Length: 174
Picture (cartoon, rainbow, N blue to C red):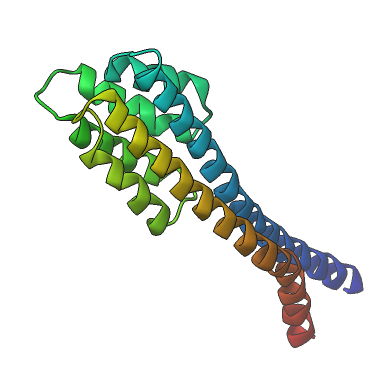
């Protein structure tokens, strides 16, 4: 009988601890995704302004350069533009954002910043797009710093909180 109690106790504590560690990992992933997005936007800026690559091809090359889930934004945007169904670059970008939203740990504020690009992509000449993409990189850098501060504050709480909650539940059950 005592053996079953020990096994049950271990299962409760370890499962809630794993849940807490999973939550802590999700907080860290947001910071990584914002950094990847910033680098991807920088790459897209270089493709558009220095290489003078057409937008569809620039989006495809950017998608190949970055990792999931960030590449989903650029890949879906390029796919929608390439389909030739009369979508504007902004509409294709918003479709890519929907795909990114499903696969990422980004928050609504992060996605709102990215949504501003829909009004500027493919609309003006390369120098104006460069200015906007540089500004977008700066805004992503600010969001990344905020996410890093949030990560420092909340990651330990999630990590330890799961184990502590497991211990509290075990104590209540005893």
